[in-house]
Each structure stands twice: as structure tokens, then as C-alpha cells.
Amino acid sequence: MSWKSSLRRHAGGVSSDTTSITIPDGLLPADGRFGCGPSKVRHEQVEAIVAARDTILGTSHRKPAVKNLVGDVRSNLSSLFSLPDGWEILLGNGGSTVFWDIATFGLINNRSQHLVFGEFSSKFADASAAAPHLGEPTIVTSDVGDHPAANAEPGIDLYALTHNETSTGVSMQLRRPSGVAAEQGLVAVDATSGAGGLMWNPADVDVYYFAPQKCFASDGGLWIAACSPAAIDRIETIGASDRWRPASLDLKIALDNSKKNQTYNTPAVATLVMLNAQLDWMLANGGLNFAAGRSAESAQKLYSWAETRDWATPFVTDPAKRSNVVGTIDIADHIDANEVCSALRANGILDTDAYRKLGRNQLRIGMFPAIDPADVAALTGCIDYVVEQLS
Image 1 (cartoon, rainbow, N blue to C red):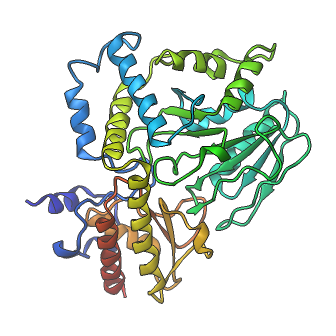
Image 2: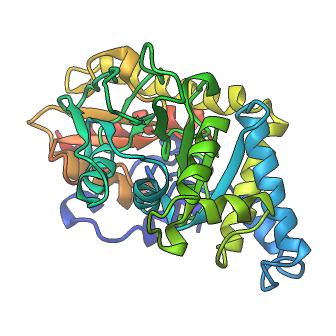
Image 3: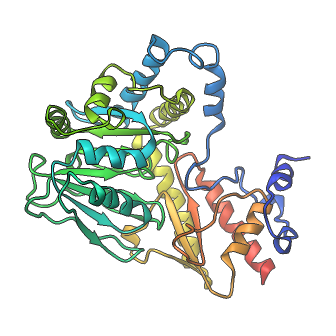
């Protein structure tokens, strides 16, 4: 049995109407994983875990083996992002969802401004609005498929941006609000699905935070934040205040531990191994230019394909706002996108479903750096084949 046949055999959970569609092997991608998180893990990352089984896995996170691994991750991320002197990489347990709560305790002095244009960008705004010790945040919204812009506002000390809205496939150019110095208002960017696959300039950002299960092809459960000197000053100032902060959500504790190449509590060591293997791969091949370039090539293939079909349309109408790492494609009403996804899954092509809360007849395609652009091109051919068979 070929591996592609095996994928078909194990890709259950599809309707009987679509399992009868067999995509020819010659059309199938070499790897059928297109999920938007957790995303495709390269085989070399799994091999790195196997190689670490006798030296790192199952050892104390306070001893040199794990601390050196954390140090390598911090150093490699600084290199990947070309961080200026004075920046620090902080990390802790819990993922980006926990970091939103952390930020309400340790980054916002009083009031924040949030750009909301999808499911995930709304969650930090909700956390800020619910915090009893903070003032009422300003929430700037736009329709899904678009994004708003940050504007200087008196009394705002943190501007919350999202590099890539995973739910809708919208990305934004990161810009510091005109006339706002970092000392007046920090720019904090949720980069969970963008970090490692989209370019950015540290001059426009103070806190660039993410989790490693998207572009870095690892498991979730960790948050990582690249912090500027201005952000470090804010963390130190709040850390010296009498504001109550739970220890696990205290950025000052996270900062102090990160400088020692450790986390406050036990980290997911296997995730760190996979993350560092991905960083080594990115850096060895040219760094962020290489990684973001692969995603850009995949995006070009996906969107140009959709634009030439009379039954498929890029959901994001402005090409400048279309994400290079998460592609959303609307499907004409006479074709059921769920049936297309079911047929693809029956053939080992996984996780092309639309974001559930968006409620559109849509495909959503992960195009993170680990995903080969040639596989994205093959996917479009498979979609064509399925649509033809369904018709």
C-alpha cells in the first residue's frame, strides 16, 4: 500500500457522498497537511525529538541541557527577526490566549486601543475590557475581510495590532501610529500566525508575541514575546508597582527567568526542540527572507489560481491585505465547500475547512513556511478535480 493510499484509508470522518471520489495519485501533493494551526510539522523536527530523547527529554528544566535549548531558541529568534540591541525574547507557558491576560496585568498601564477585524483580534480587546483595574479600551473595527488602522489617541498607552488574522486570512502592514513614541504608547502585535512567515520591522513594534504552532511548525502551549527596550521599561515599571499580578501571569517574573534561559514553570520541552529545529532550518536557508518568501510563493499560486476560476474568489478583495500564510477562498453557492473539503480529506488532503465562526462557503488554506509551494499548486489541481467530479 502506498503512503498516499494509506492516507486515504486513515482519513475518516467524511460523508459517503464524497468518499467515492478518488483523486489520481499524480495530482496529489507530496504532503497533504494544509491546516492553519496546529500546522504541518516537518519530518526533520520529529527526528530532532528522537535525537533529544536521551539528552534533553525527561531531564530537569533547571539544568544546562534544557537551559541551553531555551538559550538557543532565544538567540535564533533574535537572529531571525534581526532584533536590535536591547531587545529581549521572553517566553512562558500557555500560548497567545494566556498572553492576552498577561498583557492586561503587565503591559497596559491604563488604557489600550485594539484593532478588531476577526475572531482572534477581538479576544485581546475582550480581555482588556474585562480587566477591572484598567480603563475602558478603544475598539476600532472593520468588516471581516478588511482591517482598520491605528490612530493616535490621548490617554492610550498600548496599541494592540494583529499581524495576521487567522480566522479571515487578512494581514496588515505593521506601522506605529503617527506621532506616537514608544514611551507614550507601546505597539503590541499578536503575531501568532504571522511570526516566521511575514516580514516586519522592529522599529514599528514594541512587543511581537506569538505561539509556535503555526509558522514554527511546533505544538502549542508556549507564548513567546520579542520585547523592545521601551517594553522592557514598561514591564519593569509595572513590576515595581503595587498592582496585583498572579505569579504565572507576571511579565516581570517571565522577564527575569527568560534572561536566565528558563521559564517560571516547567516548559513543553519537546515543543522547544521542534521549534529550535525549525529555526535552524529557516536560518540555514536564508532566515526570514527565505521563510517569508516560501509563504509568498505559495500565496501567489493560490490567489492567482482562484482568480482564474469562475466559481472561486479570494475572500480578501484588496490584494495588499491578503495573507501570505492563511489563504481564504470563497466558493460559489452552487458548490458546497464542505463537500469539497470532505472529498479532499478522503484523499489524504487535510484541514482545508473554513473557520467555523466565519460561516462562509469557503476554503481556508495554511501556507506556512514548512508547506512546500509545489504542494499548494498541487492542491489547487486537486480542488479542480473534486469540483469537476461533484458537478
